[in-house]
Structures are given as C-alpha cells and as structure tokens.
Image (cartoon, rainbow, N blue to C red):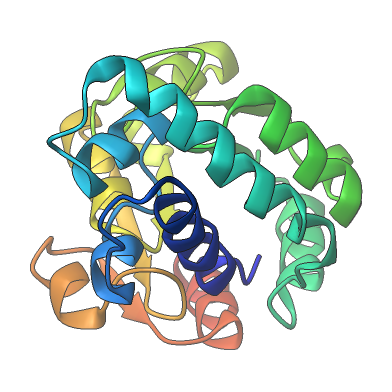
Length: 202
C-alpha cells in the first residue's frame, strides 16, 4: 500500500496538535514499520511515558481520516494473486496494531490472500525476530525457504535477526542507500521489478 506520505502526515500533525517539535519528513519516514509506541519514542524521545498515549491518539485521528482511501501500489494485487496461485504461503509481519491491519485487509480486499499475520501488539515488534519466528512456526516454514520482503531497515533487521533472507523495495519508506547497507538479496525499485525477481528466484 502506498502509505508512507500519509503516515508522515499523521505523525507531523499529531506532534503539531500537541505542541511538540514537528519531525521533518525524513525523520518521520524512518519510524515507519516500528510499533506505534516505539515510533513515538523515536520521534519525541524527551516525552514522559504517560504522554505517548496522547500522541498515539492524535496520530490515529489523522491516520484514520485517510487510511481507507490509500491505494495499493500498481500491480500489487495481481502479484499477490500470482504468488498464491504458484503455491506460496503469504504472511504479514507488520508494525500495525491488530485492529489497524484488519482495517487495511478489509478495505483492500486482500484478507483472503494471507494465511497468517503478526502485528506489533501481539509480540515483540521489529527489528526483533519474534514476528517471523512465530509465523514460521505456525506455518511449518523452514528458514531457508522463507523470504521477507520489506521497505524499511526495520524489516531487514528483523529478517537478519531471524536468520531469514530478505528482498528490499525502494518504493516505500526508507531510501535505497540505507536499505542497501543491510545487504538484502536484491534491491528492487518497482512492483513489476519485484514480480520479475520472484518469478526467477522464488
């Protein structure tokens, strides 16, 4: 889903609403993929712990005003259908809450594509390996037959910590140079490019 700009908007406006320093777009994009509490701690490290709930509430207000209207990246739905048809088991490991992921899967119609999911409010969030380890255990997937596809260094860090290969996409949250430093199997700059890579290697 093409959501990075909307996340940045919600983060910046949440800080603005409460009179906190407003992060620039680069700083806001860096926390995409983390759990909300970890993201807020990175954005506003000097806040009292009790104030994070207020910031999260304002973030959700701005996010929910726009999340139902966010588009999928062009070709993403077709790529997922092709992977499913080829027999791959598709799962989600996300920094979203369970309620947030449910909203997204319903609004995009993608819920039937994914056989398992893990969210940041279910287990230790990225870059800890727990989400991937739990998904692999649930699905009976071996490490060497598991691939993490992500657009943040948090995704790639989680994969490395779980001992799982990863492919990075540059059309999401984090810039290509930061992703490349995490040594993914490949770095692709479009859904079409990812689909071609997966056809050759997955």
